[in-house]
Amino acid sequence: MAISSNYLLPAAVLLLTSACYSGDPPLDSTEDSTGLGDSEGSAASGSPGGTSNTNDTDNANNTSDPNSDTGGDSVTDATGGGDDTGATDESTGGASTGGASTGGASTGGASTGNASAGDDTGTTEDSPEPGPERIICLGDSITEAGFQHYAYRYYLWQRIVADGIDYVDFVGSKSGTYSGAAPDQSWDSEHDGHWGAKADEVLNGGLPYGGVGSIQDWAPAYQPTIALIQLGTNDCRGGQSPESTLADLAGIIDTLRASVPDVLILVAQVIQSKDAAANSCLATLNGMMPGWAAGLATEDSPILVVDQWSALDPLTDLADDYHTNESGGQKMADRWYETLRDHLL
View: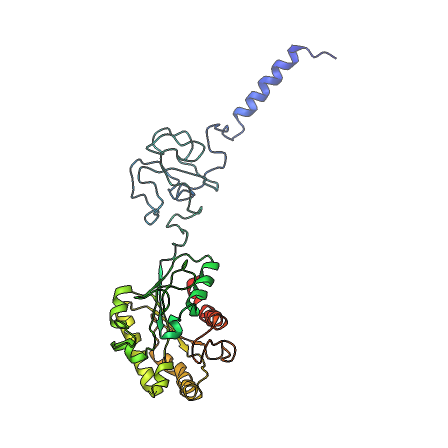
């Protein structure tokens, strides 16, 4: 049935009248559809959600936010509900010095939104990149390695690289091996392992086989943040007591700390040899080491004892009476890295 236009006109008037007195304001089509919350700090950009104030770097509740916009406040991705006093997209010059806010994000250089919504008293940023770790491998020929051998240093480097750690630098006054370059030269082979060295010679100088310098030179020159120390075999072979060796090791640690007070120290319980007399002395030295280390460790500069004694079988893991073959070097690297890894990652 056709409806007369005389009936439609009163109905239209009734609907319009109802809308005008419904009590709800009409939706402003320019307002951010997410509904900005209370103006005190609900902006995800790190700027407060209140009235825009160009070039104001001292806004209330935003004194510690490194991501705040120094050229004016920009409201981005705000959430919540409640009063919206000036945070709509209608602003064409006050929200950002580079132009109007478009869709809640500033087009003029404001922060892109690293702060979380809520009270804007500071932001949580991503953790900083780890700083460089300078590792000194300190010792005798077991650390240095002879011709066509790697010792543990090569395999330790491979384990570090395999874990994606790219902020480690092996440091020292030497590189390669005692007899020249290592078989593979594509790794960081710097170190301070000195052929025939005893702990007192590393501390005070007088190294055999043309060795140059001492820890008193190397520590200030290279500023190691981590030290791996394997010393004692030549001390025992030379008739020195375990007590004197530990005293020399303590002097080495003091010298390292004088250059880097928070240096991390890893000390090896020295590997076994095929020399029965040396092994007897080394077993005593190794047995004393945990208590000695505990007495010298500090909160800033811990000393971690690494059991290299049980890591190797001298019948299968040594190239001669004292020096590791490749399997021995790999096993030493594994023991070092078991302790070192947690401090690198």
